[in-house]
Image (cartoon, rainbow, N blue to C red):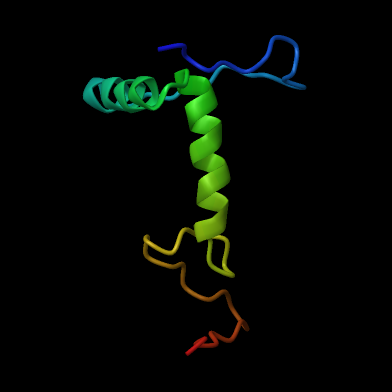
Length: 79
């Protein structure tokens, strides 16, 4: 299977991510990316793009605890 990569020269301001995460999580992410047919970097960009569709109006993914309202901010329940 051909692994899909970002075309050379298409990134505007590329950076290297230097985060410390558990080895098994990095290996698992790489495995999922490979199985999906993408490089890890392209797959991470796709995950971030997908995550954008799951953000609440507070800018947080809907599957994590939501932040407390700031001083003076009213919490409006959308239901």
